[in-house]
Image (tube, rainbow, N blue to C red; front, side, top):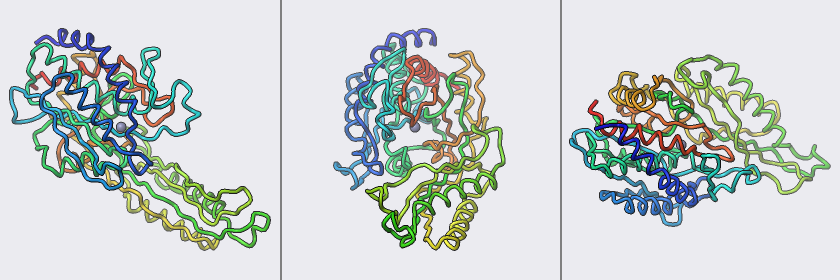
Length: 410
Ligand SMILES: [Zn+2]
């Protein structure tokens, strides 16, 4: 088959791709931890789109979750039969999104009112990860239009709950035994702006909550209380400094090359300006190079909390929100990595390099089971930011690579 013919067919589908992307972005799919209703409505729209495109084998696996109104977190799989069924090619992207963040920062458009501007589609979830949802679907649609059968059966997998740990998403599907060791796993949920970066390793991640308890008082008589806000800030800054100093080593395979430790979310405290807060809650997001021990980071964090408790008289509790030890990296010579590099070379004319990142993706859960998995896509890296957009050109060009991958014998 000629890849030029397939690429041309994908280009013809561009308008439909943009339309589908817009339809999907319009439906928020925020997990319950962030006050959302989950992915069900978005999944229904996705199934509708896939039916419209005449994909005939669509399965939905629903994980029960009492925290959302419909009690279900959907995971949709679209299968296209290939010449062989012995090993499948999986392209896995996620339906859920992070919340829009501060509304006033969305200056191009509102988060769920997508618009097309300068070759980009703006809206929350556009790049992360709906761009890949759409590019993978239309890669197969192009093959279908041309009557080309994939080499191996392709399964497009659209999962829930990726942003908050994947328990109701890819972990649920792995638990159902859907994947086999020989399958090729591609996760288009990370990459760089020219598509030359293949991610085969991730850092360990550690998220925790710092709960500081003091004593509430009138702000005009602070000595009658113990200001948890002040202690919480002092501790957080000291912790920030200590972690950066202790774990400052670099590994140039990673992007960024050092561990990161960021104070992020803060929970609301008192309602009035004139109240000394008795409680302060702040969170840290840590991405740790594999050479460091996550447990040791946690121990040091708790140790410093004890020091500040003694110093201030406040109580400082460290509560782990999530903790993931980095799995063994996928080999740079794994079949799926070599095939994808070859596809990128053929379609884009570039030599992609392999490396690691700080962000966690679905790939980690496969690596943990010893199944090679590669993360790749072409992104301007707007994930989780205001004015997030997906470049239409990237969506189309990634679809060409997926189509090539589906048809090469490798
Ligand atoms: Zn993502």
